[in-house]
Image (cartoon, rainbow, N blue to C red; front, side):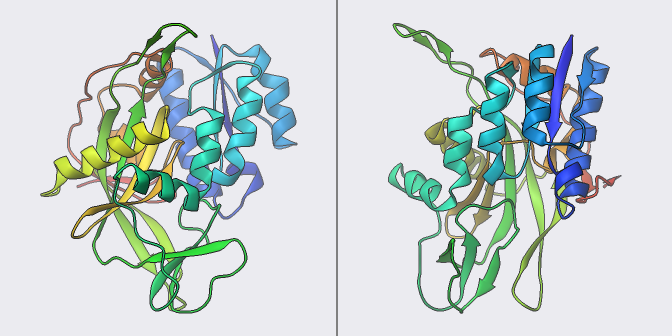
Amino acid sequence: MKVLLAEYATCHDPALAPEGAAMLETVKNSFVRCGYEVVLPGCGDFAAEIERLAPQCAMGLVIAPDDLLARYTQILEQHTHNLGCGFMTVALCANKMQTGKILRAHGVPVPGEVFTGKRIIKPVKGCGAQGVRVSDGPEGDGEFAQQYIEGEHFSVSVVASRVIGDACLYFTGNPPLVLAVNRQHIGQGEDGAIHYLGGETPVHPVREAEIIETAKKAIIVLGGQGYCGVDVVVADKVYVVDVNPRITTSLVGIAACMKEEIAEILIDASKGGGPGQVHLTGSVRFDTHGKVSRL
């Protein structure tokens, strides 16, 4: 059985190519171990490659920057079974400002919008830490500013089951499955630019239960499906600072510790099922180039 793994950055975004290659290798290896034939797009027009290859495959997954992901996911969904988040939720999460407003309206703590003083300035539509900076200067076009919160940085890697049903009767899938809580290594340049440097996984901070429940609530509120990463800062509250409706770099570390195969988890979740928990052995440090070392 063929599965299309369409990873964008390796061929089309040099700045993100190392992370893209690391994520792709992790997911590809899992599908191969599970007996699937993996199909990869060429380095030509990405949309055209998905349109060409997806009809030949039983299922597929797109890994791409958040602001591009919805378009390519929609193309995939027109031709085969999507193992990732639905394109409408992807489009919502790509708008960081709108995502924050929705989460806040549902009681999920998010940093408040501020207009003066030291604050976090980020693109309304961006990917990861690209374009994010600490500054007391003005926002540029397509940017907005949030409260700067001192705290510990973590992410939560979650796989959410697809909702199964029809127009008359709906059956919900399993509750969101937490793979791991990950410590994020964050750097800051002299110009205030924020850099994601990788992290450690799994970790068990004192407020782990609160971190997990906040992340799960965010995914449920936004209608996430498949693998999602929720970035948080732990201070007086657990603040959600970003929701990534796609494979994230943390999976590179998680896969090195996890007994289960991410391929099987994604397939089962896309059908409303999957395990109730995963089993992790040991802990690792990982970077954005796919290097993993045992702790």
